[in-house]
Length: 375
Image (cartoon, rainbow, N blue to C red; front, side):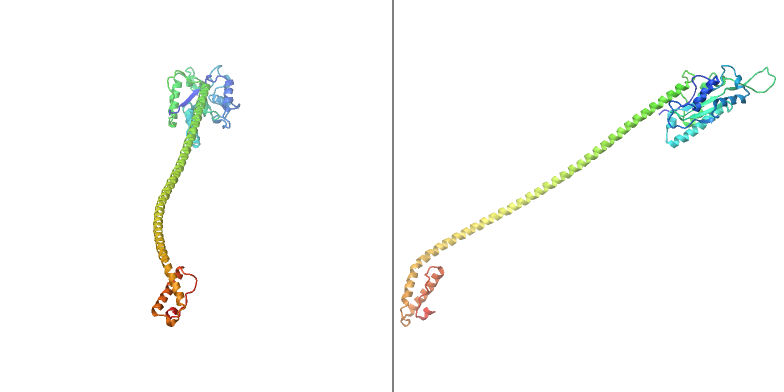
């Protein structure tokens, strides 16, 4: 960024030559009439040198040099007016506290420079304006000069007005050099030398300065809007990233849920396979048991058939035994031969077996008189 400039320029209409022009400068400098482009709420003009009455202050300087304000040469120079300021960036840089401190130091430096260069007796007025875009000081200088008259015999000092002390050949360039040197502690530099003009008109300079500051402020507003848009876009991107991260976490969580579900399904499938194997083994065991039962049933059926065949073969024996038992009922006990008694006992045992097997009738065993039969 370029260094800010130290700026001093004389008014574009030239020096002040009438008291009417002086009163016009008074109206502007003291702000007895408001200006159109004034900053709302800005402080009133601050008179660094002078009483605020420019005409009275200039006349006081003239009278101090024993010059009658009412008897000045017609159309002669009464005073010069200049503006002392700097690039807008010089006043707007830093915090509000830094700006206030810099402004205080700068305005004191303007007074010191003016007194050192032109002398207190020439500087009639210095007024600080803060009601425009760029702070600046209006300075009015009375071009007092000691007159030399060799024809006079007395040696008393005589004063006159000599415009060449302010705007003579080379004066403006030397003023620019000296002013820039005096303002260098503030980081201010001189403008480009050799521009081909004595000075820029004050109104044009102020208009250019105002437009430059307005352009800078517009650029700053545009930059601020761009920064705001960038911040908003960055915030939007951050929100999108956060949303994406949130969605990614949700997807990861869902993926983990699905993985766990698949693991559970695989575990259930493995358990079902085990249970199916157990069930298959159980079915095979049941089938084996059923085959065993069927085999046992076949054996039982076969044994029953055999038993039925045996029992059928015993039917005649049972009938013969019944007949024998019936016959033995009519034989007296003393007439029973021991062999017959044994036969009767065997027939009785056979009868009971038949009863147990359900093959005999429901009648009671036939009685016998033998001891064996009674047993």
